[in-house]
Image (tube, rainbow, N blue to C red; front, side, top):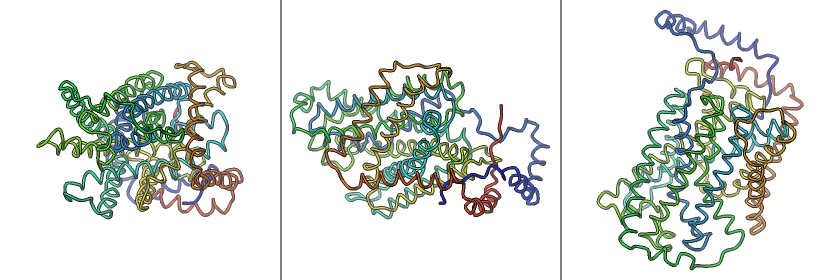
Length: 507
């Protein structure tokens, strides 16, 4: 992968060349034939507004509820020290996700561009900082997140075939790669199809959560409250431990900002963006807290910590002989979360390519399907690469501080633009104290684990992020000619191969 370059001065010439080649290869004939039988107006080669309120809520809920609630309870409990602090942290993480999403709702309705944090950092602080976000997120955070969710999917999907032992790593990784390929194919085929898949799998994961919560309510009614009666008896924890507990809890809530990545494809974003946030995030927070309470009605803290799969252990204790439902629906849940992650990650790479911060081919869209297929394929390719290492969780933990660093900067941009961009319309306007609190909390989440346990890996992550400045100076600011000469034929051949074109500008 070569660093970003810009090709604005040759775009029209390249597009004309590619279109002539497509005609020679028969693409133009196919288009003429289809035009004879289909009298519908031809859509412009842009990403269209096809995501309504229901799909927006399903995207938030479906992306947030993935593998986290079935894996993270152990990490949150381990770092919080007792049942009571564990439940408080789960609730607090829901409140943080809600406050952060409200700040993002103001930004998304004020700057109705796709790309999430990238677009807001660009508007408030300029190109270099936005580039650092795109460099870190497109190359590491998004694809590694997709990789870890699909690995969870693969573990649960393959577990029934290996009773009494863990599935081989090779099987898990191959199944994870196959899932990534399948999800990328769905997203490249159709935006509506990807939305339908998201809606269906969101309904499935809500169903299994209802089953778990209902079982917990039954046990509570029967007086199974031993683990909740002495909820605050446990070991003392450090400041860094609380920070790690929040990291793992917020990992389960990760997805609260996903809708901002597709603002340009959202119908009536000034209404549907805040509405989806107000519906989706409280629903997820309620589900998470209730599920954790249900876990503690039948499992002691030690049993929960020793369980390799908390939800499956719960199912074996409560739902037998129907305990097979839990791993099946966990498979559905992780698949839906991976689909949502892929959907939004592709839009970020697409916007970065459009702005000249990634290679131009990433900004192209399919001429037939009107999807950002090059960006989606690129994200899937990187995710498959991240499956190869033995322990991707370590990568996630060390790059979590970078995620919250950019969250804090993005919310800081809201404060800055209250003074520097007063002319912008704000359909949603949150109290500025909320933004200030979120910036301070972001600083804590960035610094506390580093201060408590200053590993050298944090320095490596910081060096990787800052290395983006060198790439920015060389390939974006200077726009070195040899990179453009190298990428021009590659872009043209990839454009012919995938039948993609630069997006049209529509008023």
